[in-house]
Length: 97
Image (cartoon, rainbow, N blue to C red):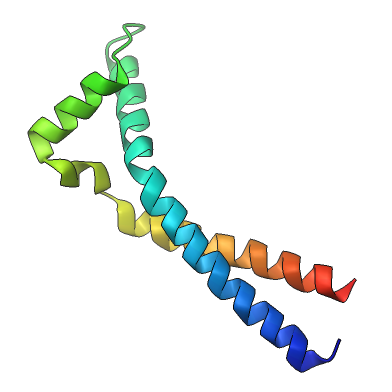
């Protein structure tokens, strides 16, 4: 495969990885926020377990639906490039083999 085709494979897959990683981060972020709050609540209150829906209700009551998306920008800025690198390098190496 010539270098120009290889470069095309790289750029297409970098773009696809960036979009897929960004979308995955946005979709899964609210679940991660609730999980982190459950873990923090359990460590603060010992072994007493608090349900996910209780935490979700508390977050939305105190901060609105936007509370589920606090910290989304750093997460997308971390996840999107890493997915782009993984997908891009995998596809380029696969094409070279």
